[in-house]
Length: 235
Image 1 (tube, rainbow, N blue to C red):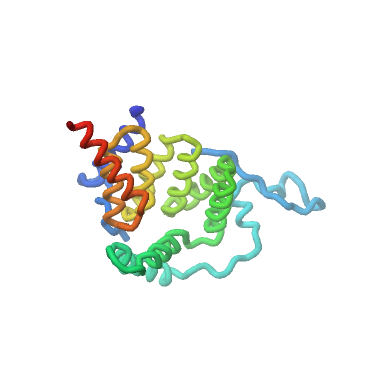
Image 2: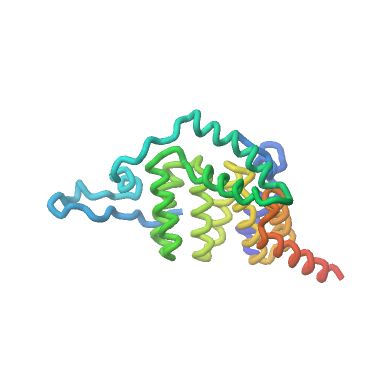
């Protein structure tokens, strides 16, 4: 494993438990791509000073969005996460799927209509396979909303799909600082460590993710496979 990847991954897996480091996994705690130019401008009004020069300005130029959630509403949503995670961790029943959906919905809301628009644009570009455009939007998002864990997570996915593991792992570090219960980030970390050949730390990440969300079949399969591989090397 390249030294940079090893150092960052070690910090994620071991530094979370030391004093002054990140919170332990599961504990509840209350880089640069081209900018994307604005499109569909009125030809009669086009001029250098009127052109949008960043995804943020482009997002702010959109028609007025519905009223943003109040601080009280966002606080209630954060409190709801405790109940949803308890439901998600139940081994039986079918209600875990609804809990998962609700958790992801809460995480996807930044509290700002403009930042939510950047997130959606980055997500759409990623779905379309346009990684440079996705990185442009998501870098603007992380620059202007650094406390929005979902923005860091989605950008880490974009870096990963682009084969850029160093920045991807660094972005996951930010996700887990902001939201230690982010099972998606832990599963993604396990996947990258596995691909980089660090099987033991990959296993640790997958297990931590499954402790939060035990219904992830891909993570379950990865744990079984890596355990067998490690047992084989120990013989």
